Image 1 (cartoon, chains in turn blue, brown):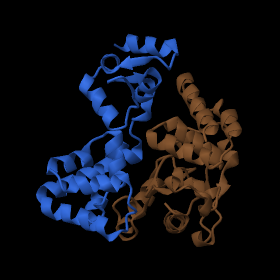
Image 2 (tube, helix red, strand yellow; image 1 turned 45 degrees about the vertical axis):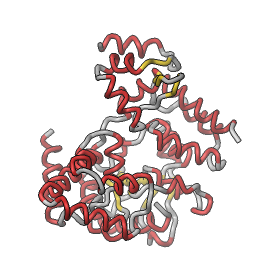
Image 3 (tube, one colour; image 1 turned 90 degrees about the horizontal axis):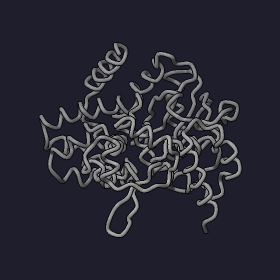
Length: 170
Length: 179
């Protein structure tokens, strides 16, 4: 699979269009995963009739690190996971906190706050996914998180200290 | 993030860390232009990405984040925050350090902060190449706030693959040709 991908890079023709199946094979993932990436705007696609096609150049960008997490994104993931911990202990309370944050207007509305409004009305497991998934989409959601009142200062400091200690070890 | 909010973050950050700061994310656009010139789309971000030139073990970045970062009481109170990042977070063309612009705003109360040059900022966004980054670049091109000729010239020194370089060039040309 790696050789096939290296051949893809070597040909340097960024405009060839791949089917979702071909893209999946080259990345070593399921076709459904490719479809999910497209639907979350993490992989651009164009429609050819009723089918979706992916440009080789976009696949290259995806593979080569436009989705790789930076240190600050990893830190954000740890904080999101801590909020998820609070959520599973008190789903109603954490939801309420998020909804109240959004209602104050302190957070400027954008597409991500609108998505949080929708998530906060839906199943808890979808909120957990948004807080703990390491995808480009979830990272954007966390950067616009309405949960800044959920963790106490002490809890937040502990999470950041643990994150720092883990990174230092690595 | 509006200009006044960035000034507030930099003022607070200066008191916490006290070292020269580099504004490296989309809010760096405030270093180059007055707010009333900027498309709204370029000011949507809630966080100010701040890096430090001399921060090998990222202790300054951690200190900043601990004090006024994501989910801090600062974030809770004001609805925006600082994000301590590494200088290496952004992919930038050669010579970018010589082109940074001091953030000169009385509201920052003398905070020692510089912003990426707008053209270098746009190229770093295009190197990341997410949809929001492409939208950011297009908005500035269509508002004629960045010069496509300068972008194309510096693009040759941007450390990206040949395929991505071509896609960036295509985007710049398309954004310039359109109405």
